[in-house]
Length: 414
Ligand code: BGC
View 1: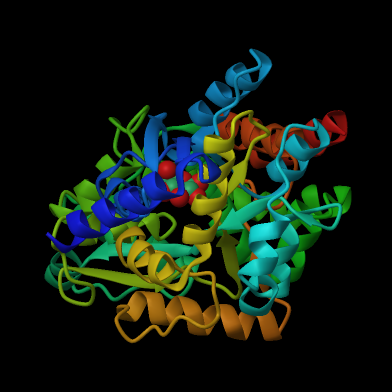
View 2: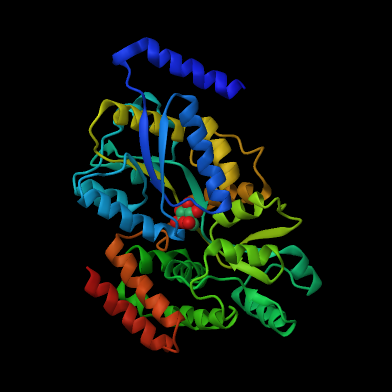
């Protein structure tokens, strides 16, 4: 009732203001279609409608957003860009360079974004000094999720080293449980790979390999060991993995068919949407090794005609960074607020751990951008790495061949 009344009163205000105030419109392209994701984006739709906005939904299913990015390119090429697009990391800069992004500095300045966002994250949202995207959250990628009962029944603790992980996986396999729930899609292979790489190369090695693209690190014995571990991981995955969506892999952990999943904390959004309780039904632990891989979702506004669409972009940008949305959205999404001034007391232990670990990592130089989720590299370089990772994961290619191929692919992509 209250919501309806608010919507009615803002609609009335808009009507009173007449032609001076355009009614906010937004066509929003995103890839949030799984249970927890859909609940989370529903929060934004609701807030937008309460403020008198009309939301046209353009969901493009496909974890990691590859399909959404293909759809975006087609829309922009046909001269009909959506109003707002889920876009992140260096891809924001790439679209800015194509001259198709709107400047949202007015909202950012009026709302004081610079005072409430960490400087490193604000940097991703700026293009040539102007604000070109609105950040939603911080997802951590390097997590291991587990079914608490399955671990208990098999006398297994959350692994703290990759050797422990391998030992646990072998024990589970003997007991007839699928050790690792996985979907054989390139972005999911890349997600496991970068988590293993962070754990085994350490934060400095990860940065050299996937931020600086240093050829010596890409072909180092440590990188060979990362591919060796990937070959082991392949053995822990069931034979029906190819093509499986990530949320179906999460469901396998929920129902006890599998023990672990290595995935960003959007997986927690799935557990929560299914009524599962952290620490009781499922466990979260940072993957073995030091460091924190961040993945910040954000929305960029595209250059569009029409006062109503521009009003929609302003309203969306304002709501996205607003404190209420930051809290309610992230409670559903599994991530943590990107604003530094949102209290976390209503958030669960996994979210609190994420926030504490992120602060510690930021202090000791171990806070790193996820390459698999488009935070570290431009599309061509990230794609070149993922092609090698997935080719290795899906064949009997040796680790030595893989590192050579990796270095060549990266060199050719520049
Ligand atoms: C996005 C998340 C999303 C996940 C699965 C990631 O790249 O950052 O928001 O939930 O992909 O689709």
